[in-house]
Length: 295
Ligand code: PEP
Ligand code: MG
Image (cartoon, rainbow, N blue to C red; front, side, top):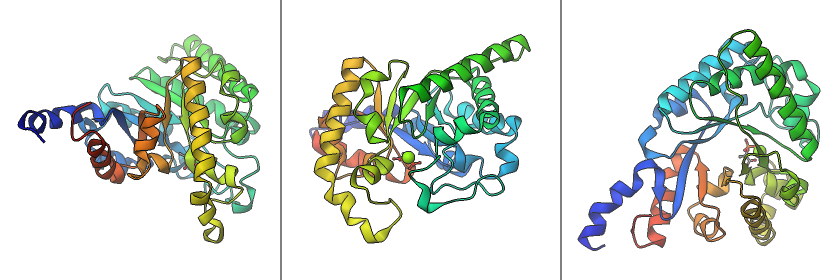
C-alpha cells in the first residue's frame, strides 16, 4: 500500500475497525477473556453464559453470575458487552441442572427453557441488571421464535429491576435483543418492535434452515449446500433490521469465516462477533477487500 495507508492502517484497527466492519469478540470462558486484548476489538458481541457458568452450583448463584459479569465489564473498560442469557437444552447441558439431549434441538431450549424455569430466569436477570449498572451491558435472548417470548422476558426484567430498586440494590434495566437463529423469527423481525437489537446466530439458523443438525457429520455438507438459502435469508434480515432502525450483528461462525465476511459486509451486516482465534484472519480478509485502506 502507499506509505500513508501503511501508517494509517494500524490506527484503523483500534476499536476493532476493519474494512468497513466493526469486530467484536465471542467469549465462552474467563480464559477467553484473559487472552483477549480489549483494544483489539470494539467490544464483546456475545458471552455464552451457559459455558461461563458451567456448573449448577454457579448457575444457581446470583453472586457468582455477577462476579463473572463484573470481571468482563471491568476488563473491557467502557467497551460494550453483550451477555446472552443461558442457552440450555438441546445439545447444551449443565451438569447437575440440565441433561444434554442432542436429539432435542427442536425442544425446550434457550428462551423456551428459561420461560419454563422462571426462578432461574429471574436469578440471572437480577445478576444482569446489577451488572448493567457497572458498564454498557446489553442482554441477548437465545432461541427466540415469537415476539411473545421477548415480551415475557422484558416483563420479567422490568419486575426484577423494580424489585432491586425497592431493595436499594444498584442496577440498570439493560436493553434486550434477540438472537436471530430460528427461521420463523428471521422472517418476521418487523414484529419484534420490543427488540433493542438483533444478533444473527448462523450456527443454529443454518441447522434449522437445512434441517441438518449442527453436530452431525453425516449431514454437515448440507450446511455449505444451503449457502444460497442462507444468504437470501441474511439479506432479508439485514433489510428488515435497517427498516426497523435496529442494530444487527452476526455472531455465528459465519462471522469468523474469512471467505464469507466480505459478503456479509456487502449485505450491510457490518458488526461481526467472532471467536478471538478468528480475529486475525477475518481482519486480514476485510482489509484485503479494501486494499488495506482504513475504514
Ligand atoms: C449460533 O447459533 O450461531 C450462535 C452464535 O449461538 P451458539 O453457537 O451458542 O448456539
Ligand atoms: Mg445458537
